[in-house]
Amino acid sequence: MSERRLVAVLGYSDGSTNGLHPVCAARLARAAQEVEPGDAVLLSGWARGRQPDSEAELMAQAWDTPTHRVLVDREARSTFGNAVGAAGLARALAVREVVVVTSGWHGRRASALVRAALRPAGPRVVLAATDERGSLGARLRELVCWTLVPAQAALAARKR
Image (cartoon, rainbow, N blue to C red; front, side, top):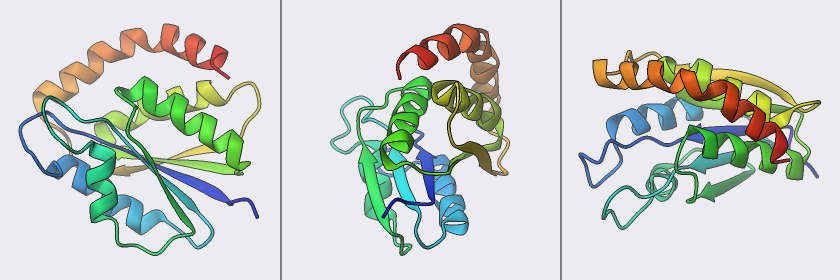
């Protein structure tokens, strides 16, 4: 049986904590509100610095919402990596929809990259965002990262 949807939760860490970062915890809570029976959940993110556990593993430890399947991607090191990983898994699972769960300040770019990685035809991509604004530094970084989106989108489309 294939899953109806893939709920892709994008990790976050700024290296300031050894545990689950509050931004990442908010994304996980938003995913718990979004998940439905039959969904597969992808927890995605790598270990920053000398942390023993990846963002994905920390989210998996905290995940307590019943779901069909929980998958962990410890290798995604960026939003681009999250997008390529989620798209590959969405194709492998033959889902009809990918729900990208991230912060509101990060959502447009993240979902744009997932859409690009699923082109030319793929499942529908929807955004389920948290409502936190993010720090000034995070929002400025996001603005700078938008300059890379055209090149990353083209690269993501080729990684199929």
